[in-house]
Amino acid sequence: MYLPKEYPFIHIHAQQKPRQPVIIKANIEGLCVLLNALISAIAQPERNAIAEIFDGDAEVYEVVVRLVNTHDELAPLPYQKQ
Image (cartoon, rainbow, N blue to C red; front, top):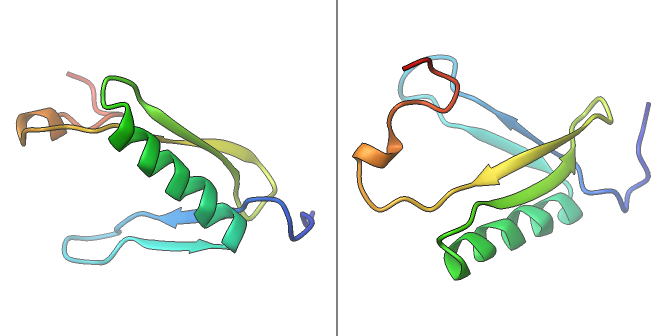
């Protein structure tokens, strides 16, 4: 299934091993939605910012942007059991 050009689509490819880059592929609309979420996280640090976007399979998902201030706040990983 293909989405019309005006839909914000983005795919964030995670690292497969250390020192690999994270790759973001997106159209302009997708990058704008992500940029707005980044700006919202900076403007309202007490709240998570959310970008609702589509991936390459036309599935909708959320990118959550959370502002942290210390290295301790980076751990544990979001999907890791504590």
